[in-house]
Length: 326
Image (cartoon, rainbow, N blue to C red; front, side, top):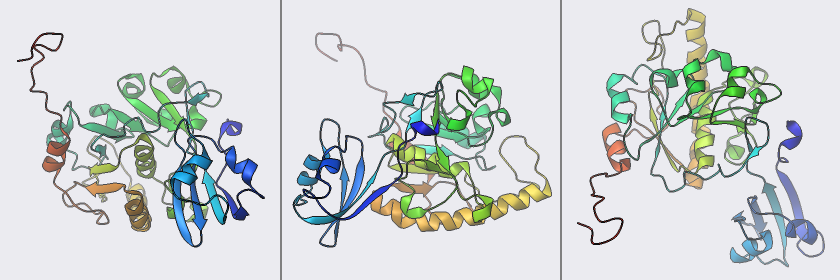
């Protein structure tokens, strides 16, 4: 599997386009993204389909004959359940108003779930066992597949994102037989500056680096890669105690509750670092959870967010197949 992963970030410092790096840079293909420095000015470049890096640089106003620093990175590769690269997934939701990231705090109650369920234009993204009692459009996990309800794996309506290590060759029967499964590479070394552009999905830090791992980080990165530019957090309580755990039935020991509270605090720091990164990229994350313990992102009204995203289905189909519409 690892041999299929794209290369990590590559940086070429103080190169002369023609003399030193011409052949290499001219063969950079569509889908690659880059940051180019010329005379102290940074240019962010994306190489679109049916184009070349040279054309993309020229269109951005970069003088190809001048000295510049170049940093290249490849978008993360998604994989099919048979281990082959999955194409056509990146950007597939571009142009969609928002995605509602449904986390599993107790505030994601019956009323909130009813507001989001089966509403035209409203795209929902759940994590972990939250997709058992609430059927989302998208879903992600980072833990072992057997920790999640079989109904999630069996449901072809849900597009499911799982760590690539659980796909063919290293996965479980549930993943191998499940419909609509996509794998992603992951890493455990958080870096805010690289978060939206490294070639694997970060889910926090390994315990040797201070911990703070969470599927929430992966879900945000996947939302970005799918083309969403606004994420509305729902059920993001960021608090757990003996009385308030999840919105669905689940036990938590006192130690597990303390661990979760520690993770929330670490994540709050991560998100604080990510705020300027998201702002520069045009990626808006807002919180529609009343009383949330996560105060980093702007608070918004869930009713208003749903209204802004809902598609009007009141039009008549009469006349669409010829003749005059009424």
